Length: 369
Image (tube, rainbow, N blue to C red):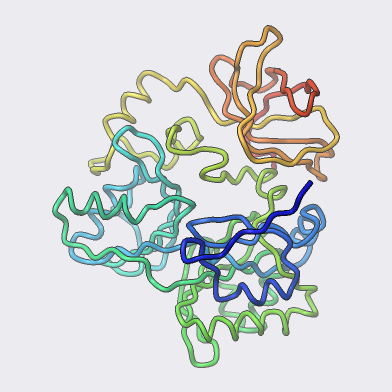
């Protein structure tokens, strides 16, 4: 198989840390929010084992922010998401599915409440800024919307707490999950959240001062030697095992939050006003026609993201595979698939055609772990 490179341009931006990760041996990129996002540093399975045991530093600057501020900022934020944020608190992060007027998903960001009139929408891979601007304009809301200069560093893994304590002191370990605060590094304050796209624990540093962020990046590797620190990135195996869904891979704007298992983030009974609320009420009343499920596949190894049809023994389409990988934990291939009714229940079986092979697929619940 030929190796191809990504041509860098203003349309595909590098990050402040790109030169460092290239010296550290990044082996592949993906494009996320029009930016380079590291996809591998050699073996994904080796990185998986390291992430679960030690600590990694990730360049996730591609996780861009949409800043929304002003008198009507809270009204706009609530208009965008089906999650009730009326009791949200400053200093907290909130996982918030963003919904369009059809009730389908636009994005599934983490929203940070910085002040009563200032929010950061930390987005997955879709152009939320234009969605927000359109809603603000159409509803004549008094808000300011722009992409701030914020480049996130994630510190993930069980030893992330020891490494961060070494730099910021014991106070950093007292930060509660999905909470954030400001911490000093060499006379520069950084917003740090107890969050990250893994289930192994860790932090995300929302770097606004680029030079200080580069200094912090270097310090993490210097002081992290005793914890076996390595560069890393979101890991396909770890995130599938943990049931962490990826917008654009596992679901997109053709899917609604009920189909994706986001029921606990949908508030239809409250008085809040959000786009697509009536559509979601109708979907709930009529019932969903498909659902994201886990699958186990009888094959020794596979690693993919992309849609592949799953059929029954008669060739009838029962769903499509969205992501899959070999799981060292379960010692089998597992994946995430959108399964049609009435097949979306555990123990249903189907078949998958790939690389001239017919593979048996067993439907199961999410998450795997």
